[in-house]
Image (cartoon, rainbow, N blue to C red; front, side):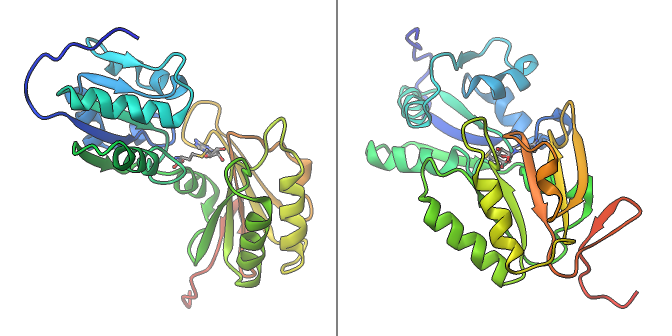
Length: 253
Ligand code: SAH
């Protein structure tokens, strides 16, 4: 990468921003302002592409920087040179995003730079709104990715979600190389709720090529599920009415 020259002697800062689900209309004005005010933007290429029109006259660091920890180290280093750095994350940066990694890396580096974290609409919010109102009662969010978490731990959490009658939302449900976890997750939940439990599957929520399906725990595997998908499994009271998935809060209507 080119050396970024220190153009002023202001204190640098890293602002970790959540871009929301993808469509810029769902990005908060505060995040837009932070991106506008930045002189350096760091992020994974897919997310940089989403905000390309906002990046004129900014130094952008993306290519060849796939590794999250390295990206955070770079963001801290550049901020220490006095730059206003924005580190982008999809959805909310504190939900399987960059915020935690940045804070950990900053501590590990012994850096004193300021860090601001700006929230975004996370995938489960976006997906729920597409399906109706499935999250009206207590819910859990579980990532099925076992790259950084033992599969045994993930299974225990799914079991607890099932036992507790929580609505269960699954992130990272299935990738090309990781196909059995969603099957096992469904088996575990079937031990606690019926085959006819409503399930919502949303791909590309609130961005181009959005698709949604409302199905059941019995039939969910017949539908296309991949890494751009969130799966929401209802609790024992969730029902489907006129194409909407609804979890009642308990009001007398
Ligand atoms: N920080 C992100 C989550 C990153 S984990 C957030 O808060 O949304 C990546 C997973 O998020 C994907 O595998 C998928 O399950 C989910 N995801 C992210 N954006 C999505 C979208 N627009 N529609 C559906 N799922 C999405």
